[in-house]
Length: 392
Ligand SMILES: Cc1cc2nc3c(=O)[nH]c(=O)nc-3n(C[C@H](O)[C@H](O)[C@H](O)COP(=O)(O)OP(=O)(O)OC[C@H]3O[C@@H](n4cnc5c(N)ncnc54)[C@H](O)[C@@H]3O)c2cc1C
Image 1: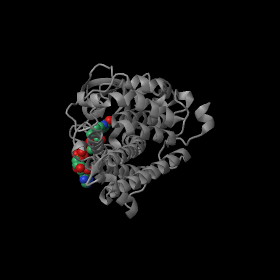
Image 2 (image 1 turned 180 degrees about the horizontal axis):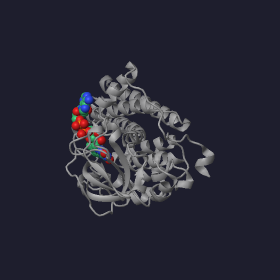
Image 3 (image 1 turned 180 degrees about the vertical axis):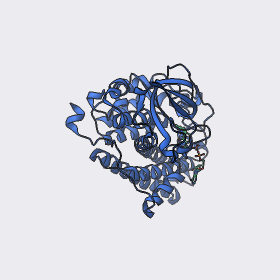
Image 4 (image 1 turned 90 degrees about the horizontal axis):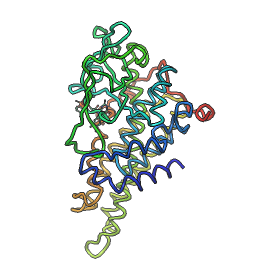
């Protein structure tokens, strides 16, 4: 039911305008309100927190269907749901859930995630943004760069340094939910991106932004742990979305290979084209199983950082390869925007960079295998899916 609803929205409402939005580097105005109206923005959150009461696998299915049409739609889910709302569900107090999570799940407030800075990406603990305690407030300063929905969001889950003297820099960070209409906040869009051009990516600058202590998510010093659990959820949406992109490449390649003739036969009848199609089938099935496993682990309340990282790394690398081969199958036509596959290729490149580059995921996987890395229990784990609680 969820798949069908999201497929209809993406195929009927977004697909007809996506090429033009991509050309204009503009997100269509109707996308966010419509996703809110359909309940997609709170799909896997309990009804009592404004959501639809579905499980985490449903979130994956939604992301897969959205990215079959365009990556920009799935990116909305990654930041609004994966990186922000699920972190509130996991770490926020009941009061914070009432104030921030409910309007987000209902789609009345749009949410973003501010971690990356102009000089700091993968090495999160080196960030330079600061949050200094002043009475009952914190004063926030710093620049966040490459922030999805920067100019479209009302709330940003923002991480900065509260303790510059912490012996371990990981322990000097804290997380805040910041309303972006506070004085001292400025935002802007980044144009000229290679892909996700129908999406919104920008920067957020804080200059002496006062936020009350009541906006701090988790304890002081828990910012790094919170950011990593945000990524456990965001990466799941990227993995499932990239699986959808592989499917889109496969469907487009099958269609074209049967239409196009060369040397007196359909190009689909040639072995080398069949090899590309077979590889896409293999990648799709493997990516799907990996994200479904991670979704099942989330449903069961099992820690899944390792499995989610593997699913994200595999699916994003495989979607980049599938998109490149889909362009190849289309020959010169694939090299123009007459067909969708050139957009798939440009979009697929982003996902091997954001939410942990492929290199970072390789380091993680090797670290787990070698015993250099293990996940320690968190003070607040992502709640296991409980149908009675979710739908009450
Ligand atoms: C479209 C888009 C949307 C984004 N949305 C958001 C968002 O909403 N919120 C947000 O906070 N951020 C966002 N980002 C930023 C993204 O998360 C970062 O780009 C990413 O974490 C990588 O950081 P970086 O670009 O600074 O690269 P760097 O960390 O500078 O890395 C540069 C290169 O060095 C490699 N490298 C770094 N360290 C190592 C190492 N130890 N070993 C081997 N290789 C290494 C990397 O893999 C990469 O190839 C977005 C980025 C894009 C492109």
